[in-house]
Amino acid sequence: MSDAPALRVGQGIDVHPFSDDPERPLVLGGVVIGGEGVRGLDGHSDADAVAHAIGDAVLGAAGLGDLGGHLPDTDPQWAGADSIELLRRVVGLAAAAGWVPVNADCTVVAERPRLAPHVARMAERLGGALGAPVNVKATRAEGLGALGRAEGIACTAVVLLTAVPGAGRPDGSEQSGGTAPGDGEVR
Image 1 (cartoon, rainbow, N blue to C red):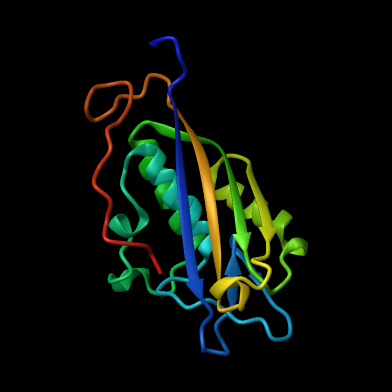
Image 2 (image 1 turned 90 degrees about the vertical axis):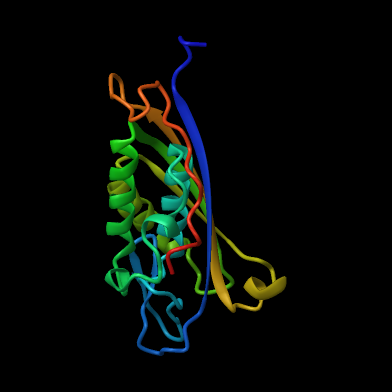
């Protein structure tokens, strides 16, 4: 097994309801999405569900818990934070533990607004923060449940990490150990 590449997979999910604040922008994948009737998501940071899901997947793959454990929504310093910058911070935590991203894949679930025109720019912004290719897909809940009633937006993500060659891990092993998850998600 020592000849096998050191790879880790993590998954993430994030869900945010729409905000009642008509001035709050909708930010997904680091892209501000405008248009008539477009509402922002409710949350402590900029509520970018796409960046949050990818960040959680990175932390999970690195065995570092979850986003809420590192960037809690109870901490005033993260109020209104740019989630692309939070994703960069998470990638730095994974690198410090000896892991770097290979790629990410995510699916955004939203009845509206229509996201297809924005996925290429989202992939570009997310890839820049992750330091690896990101594939972004968008789908609808087809009227089913809260997402289907357009009460919010969700995103699922998977990230593949590889070990940094020759990087020392805190435990001295070739793979970093996991930690207990935090108390929730960055909002």
